[in-house]
Amino acid sequence: MSRIDKLARKAKRKARVRGKIFGTSERPRLTVSKTLKNIYAQIIDDEKMVTLVSTSTIAKDVRTKVAEKSKTERAQIVGEEIARVAQDKGVKAVAFDRNGNVYHGRVKALAEAARKAGLDF
Image 1: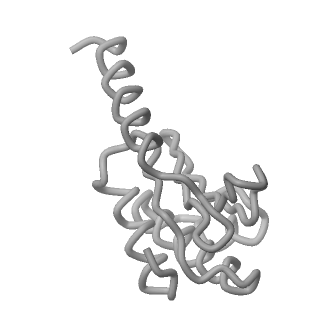
Image 2: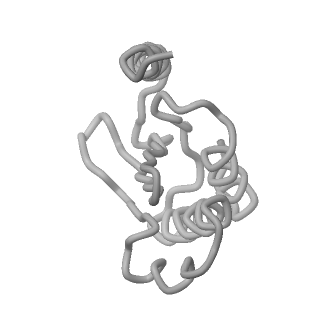
């Protein structure tokens, strides 16, 4: 399978997911992006077009916690951190946007850690 085929399949998944999920003021969208080394999470209000909360493995407060951890453990830490910061901002419920990624591995670890830390999906 070529890289172009993989990118096309991911684009189809992303369009399908984004067609169904829309972040509102009551239930903003939690979107997850990942690279080979890092993982990023944002909570977005699509009505106002505003990012309410964001964190990643390269954020200053998280960077020290994720040193010498596996990628899945890093994703769990980011999930816990995004839930903590979101609750501090008053966000309790979110719509989960996996951003074209398969719900597996790091994406799943981040989502489950955020749920465990108190975010309602």
